[in-house]
Image 1 (cartoon, rainbow, N blue to C red):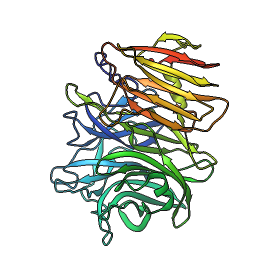
Image 2: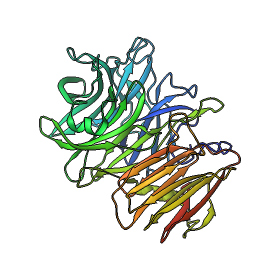
Image 3: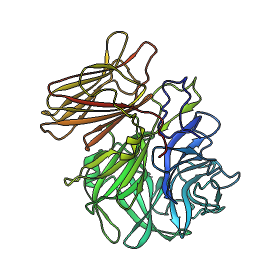
Image 4: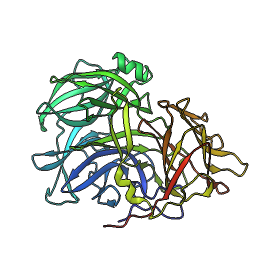
Length: 459
């Protein structure tokens, strides 16, 4: 089944993972099995609202062709997940793909249990059927820590053992990541607090607004350092952050640098897949408009390759497999004015102050990306497309230099900007009936190349 959206809805992304209809939120358990990538996600199969959460499921041989599968995890009436199968991860447990997830019952107040589900047939490359274990492996947070938020397990291997992170928030408003030893997935032992919001590097990177850290993820950089990815909760989803540092054998995480993971306002709950030679990340982009009148809500971003720069900052770029979505020939190869398709992949390199106009309103206002390599800034200005949470331009600092390159991936209402390999901005922009998609690049010595996105052909 194709992931393409109904053509009558101009806001619906056609090339990113989302269910055919209804609600989607967090990506869960990205996993590679028998040569295929599997992506699970939070999904309400009955309505475009956050309720009745299941695990949806799609898979791909190449990160470009995606196929929908039957729902993987369904709440069990009377069970520990009766009110929802919430976020988690997927691991290979002795040759059996196993989902490790948060179960919530109808009485939960932010405290989940840790549940397991196993693939019914590990020899099925599509992993279309899953069996839920009836008893949680962790029934709640450890005693004595005054934990008021407990969810989102993430299992990883380090120093020859399997361990897990769980996102938490404490009664005094301190966020944290809890650590468990789970070499045997059915026997979890609490091993302490990996990190909390009082850590100096965390406080410098995030301040003290967050009261909980959701969806903790951990990946190893190519230089041997580690990156802790966090979704910052302040009573509701706020933003995402990262910390780079060292993970010792205990393990203890010593953070040395950090910052915003994505500088846009429509990116949350990223999930990471650690591969032998790279780490891939997907995030959830929520709807930044009033709900109603549509039968869908939410989409996953394009896969991103993430690593670490020598200075400890995030390295991020689109997965190279996305090039398979490009049309055979670019629609633009030089600055100027040209119509834009509904979905495209655009790269602009600037040697001086350069403005990239992407959308024009009937009044003449423009959606623009401004590049300034001398000042070291990229600015997304969308004042003609206001939103309730903020109307100010998004200004992102980047290293100064002679040249600055920005890659823009647009798919319906989903806009993803990659600022060199240093930062990303994810925003939702909803085109109105009288708006015009038009590219205009102005600036000295700018270079431009753009491809329309087209359904990929197998080969």
